[in-house]
Length: 150
Image (cartoon, rainbow, N blue to C red; front, side, top):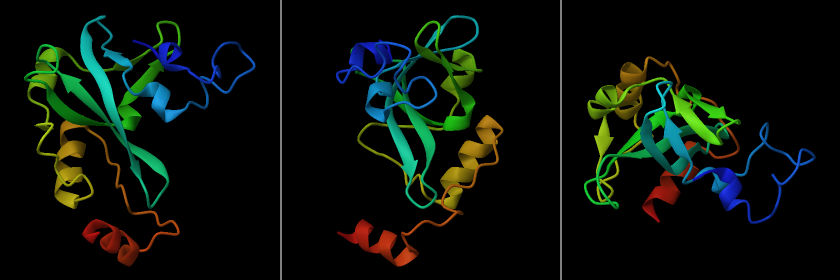
């Protein structure tokens, strides 16, 4: 499925709209992810925002399973995905065997993606150096802690 299929507001119907340089996050959820060998790697289930920096941290992808059963979820650093505007999908420079060993999680057991340990694990696997949460926005550490406890 592509972002054009979920464009309920019509913002991508013609060239005068915002895409593909600026895209609505909800239109990207469900987009297919392929590799450069034209193999399907899954689809985007969620987009994780770093609330301190205002940047996209991860795309949560599904991989494997049938009809949602046995799917593995994993976080891919946003910078590793490329929008393929011709085929209306994302590209990830990885093969299926690599993704089988990616740090993943179950739908019912999400990790603490804001932790340094999680970030380090993802960076090591994908060869990135992102440090989410290092840039500050109007949210303070106290605000973040308070929201977690609510």
